[in-house]
Length: 357
Image 1 (cartoon, rainbow, N blue to C red):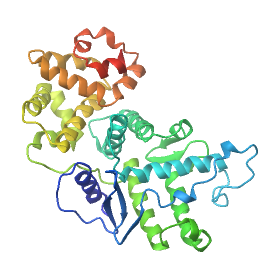
Image 2 (cartoon, rainbow, N blue to C red; image 1 turned 90 degrees about the horizontal axis):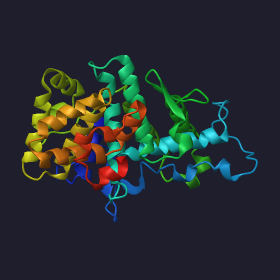
Image 3 (tube, rainbow, N blue to C red; image 1 turned 90 degrees about the vertical axis):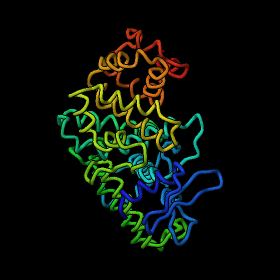
Image 4 (cartoon, rainbow, N blue to C red; image 1 turned 30 degrees about the horizontal axis):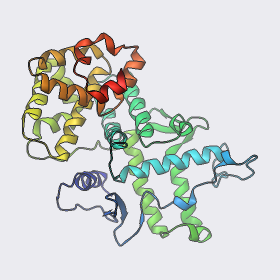
């Protein structure tokens, strides 16, 4: 499985780009009746990749007075308890569901964008040569937090994991997530007959699911080649900065008006397609995460550049502040009071006002 091919197919289906399907065997995307799309096995579409282990979900010990059972993998991970087991299951489901395409509505659109954005950035940030190691770690933690938050997961799962170098670990037990997921799939392959009634796929297909899960995990840990968004006419400058954050940071440090000019040119062009809008939104959030995260006052230069085109300034400010809640967390971390930036607040629309004021 080539994760880059799968990611391009994900974007093709998600944004109805109408391009020929690429090689993603043994998986393929299947449209559901409610306009969702799931990654399924190409030769039988009754079981999705994200939910193949749905009936293997551990019992929730929070609903038992005295949980008296052992985790399935307790022989391999003696430090694991039934609470940890459930949290690791939630993480596995969250990672696999990265491939799912949701039916969007006003209530889930922000979370959907944030999860997709953070997954993409987790594959990027490790290769960002213009960032110091400390800055990479800050952003990796930031992206992973919102990747989980936007799924969404419960609070226990949200704070249960951390990076040790590039390894994702379950903090409480120090269990390496890659090792655990590998053992998890191997267990159900080896004990397939015992669980046959709960698993709708065959052992070789569990192996295929394992392979893809490991690819997704490696991408999150920054251990594999960074992903890129596919080209499309009219997106050359935008994608050059989206697919290489070093180029974004270099251009900004040398002449920030070049970046602002690319933003202006995009907004001044014809109405964008959904994919083009997604790429532009990604560029704006890159500006948030790789520039404003470390120096929020750079926002003043953006407003100064666009002050003579207030309609464009309002459009950019509201996408920056209302497409995600990244800036809300950044400002809290840095103790920034947005009301002190009257030149910014004056361009807020209703949604930005609701979130930040």
